[in-house]
Image 1 (cartoon, helix red, strand yellow):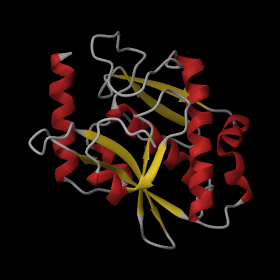
Image 2 (tube, rainbow, N blue to C red):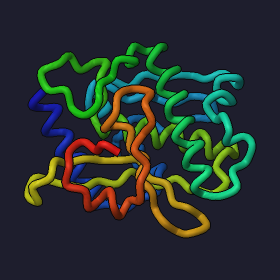
Image 3 (cartoon, helix red, strand yellow):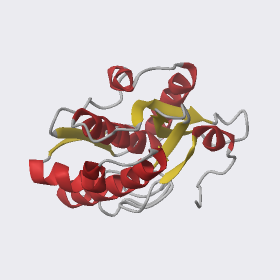
Image 4 (cartoon, one colour):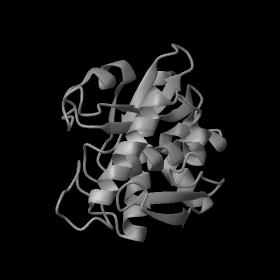
Length: 203
């Protein structure tokens, strides 16, 4: 657990110091980039375990859900992204045993089936890139995950997946870590997310 925490802190430091495209996140050692039908799911904390999960065309369509209808604006699309994350986590959880992933960090618990924020940010980014590659995202582009906090500012280090609204230019956090597997992710303006001083968001 100590080595995992050391790696976690290094990854947060690199994330805070480096702005990058979504694909660059994977080239810096965070799991593996998705393909057209496969996401390499991180779990066990800081991508210690990477499990490939291949999706059928029917499963991808199910994950995309209402995104397939074409959202009228960014807000509507973010609502559909929330549902896509939930369906994705439901399918993945049943397939690889992470269905009981608890919110936040679970110190002292077995970690193989649990995910920290690096795992969650990586998996959500992979999902978003897959959706983007299939043409489901009309109002958003996918960015590399962002981070906040590094103890010296009295905040716990934390990372999140990020999208940018193409219409407004505003960046949004898509944060699955504060809530249990398959529950709606926290979606909020990244500027607000970065200012937050709580370890686990309630909304």
